[in-house]
Amino acid sequence: MAPNLPPLVYCHDSQVTIIGAGNVGSALAQRIAEQDLAHVVLFDIVADRPQGLALDLSQARSHGRYSHRIIGTNDYADTAESDLLVITAGLPRRPGMGREDLMAINGKIVAETVRQALVYSPHASIIVVTNPLDVMTYLAWKVSDLPPHRVMGMAGTLDSARFQTFLAQELGVPAGDVSALVLGSHDDRMVPLPRYSTVSGIPVTELLSPDQIQIAIDRTRHGGAEIVALLKQGGAFYAPAAAACAMVESIVLGQSRILPAAAYLDGVYGLTDLYLGVPCQLGKGSVERVIELALTPAEQADMMTSAVAVKENLNLALAAFLS
Ligand code: APR
Image (cartoon, rainbow, N blue to C red; front, side, top):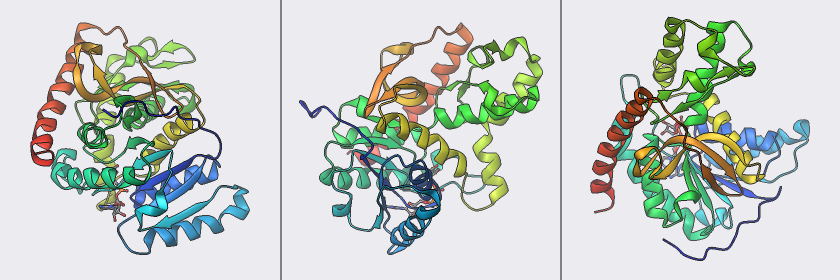
């Protein structure tokens, strides 16, 4: 661990570097720019692509009246002094592929990009978006040498948004009226929690039949795969970018929002030494607090199933990349 890091002071002039200017990265850059949250550096290995995207986004500025700088680059030196790194570099899924199939190739990419970016921004915090999410987040933390609360993964905000959407469809209410919660791994072993999902404060378990709730759970668990199958090429990117932007906003502006995220677990939920989706308070560059909810035995068992699968993949990933 790197001790004695200076405290982070975030303000409206934070700089966010997005590594990977693909579908998710460019959609995230657009959101950060349009919300005028921070300066944005878009980095990619493909020559000229991030520069072209940054130029295009800059030219959208006059309509959106946002003021922060957006640059694109293939040179890590241009990412220097970033406050936050968002790692979206890597391959998305193809139809029929599980997120685990991406492990070998994306593991190499995540390890390399984190190492290189931290040379120029040693005090940055990190949000990982690349899949398989829980394993890639652990890997990023390991190679970063940062305190664990400065590295986190984006998945719970996305999975919860998907659950919110499908619950709203079953209820026939606006999605914005639903507050939903999904914990666990970012795969089909995720743990949607209807007891902690509400509409105007009413748990959805009071409003929907068990069958209706199960429909929403099943669609949420396979929400990413459903989009991969429809698109034929590449994966979802609008909702992942929106979910990542909510985390970026809370961290950059120090909002201390409670959002589900892949956080380092050191004893909570009976789990140690892994990253997994749990409710977190996100502010000022870090996970300020991991929240341990009271779970039923069945919910706890689902968390364990989720965790065991992540641990297995993690051991494979660590053997491959850190040996
Ligand atoms: N350094 C920097 N950028 C890289 C590197 C690297 N070593 N390797 C690949 N990239 C870039 C690619 O050039 C591409 O522009 O990462 C980008 C990935 O973009 P897309 O292929 O469009 O993938 P996207 O849909 O954005 O998904 C990225 O996020 O949600 C996850 O599962 C998804 O793991 C995937 C990641």
